[in-house]
Length: 357
Image 1 (cartoon, rainbow, N blue to C red):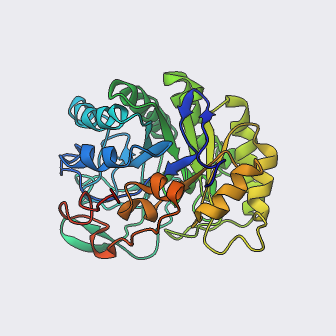
Image 2 (tube, rainbow, N blue to C red; image 1 turned 30 degrees about the vertical axis):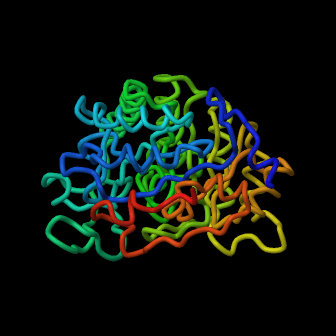
């Protein structure tokens, strides 16, 4: 069953034994010092039959954190904390990359050690964020200076090097879901008039520099990028997303990256047709494409069989189904996850979901 979805593929320098990818999911179970929690190796190791695991988003520097209890990869202690995770996955024949992020304005000064949130422009997100002191309204961020932007780019490169020290197979740049890279991309959050703002080419500059820094650090064939053109999460908007995201894709294309990971929002696909922006990205992207967005195994098989994409990532199904690949292979029903335990907590709803055998 699902012959193409379960067949091997190579994403850049990373060989996958199947095309089922575990999507990055924040689980808020790291230690307060941003070292991965003790259960992380078990959690990821349980899911190692995926062709590729993309970890939860992981801070690239001390000013990158937005949410409580999320991990980093910018100190020796954090690198050592990730090593049991990569060893557990590799011991089971799996592949794993770490998703690198900076949350930008989706943060709060109390989570950042008193440092004010930063962003391309002083435009606040709507709503509140959970801090160690409870829910707090988003603060209006401070616009980054040019030298600060350069320092964050260097942080991404250093984090990529740390990822290899920790034993990862590569990295994924988090350019989606309203965090810093996405904030630069879209004109609803980027109102700059310098080289990092204005037309789409300027707004994509930060993304290209970050991807380039990671590629130079560990090799382009071990670097992926995630984008979410249709996602309004975290108060994101753009006046012309088709131009914005096809421009970003065109500028990334010469780097020779391992893959481009595109998140489609639920409901964007109808009658089996790819959304307009996905089609445009596919036309502009010469390499491997990974898709995400409430896919079933049946629909995933269709898109990889037609070479519309080379892999498909699954998020929530992996919460309750550590043996998702085996369930797909056997045509077995999927277990439902407990939403109350998605974020934070202990082993319950994290490492206690059983396999079928």
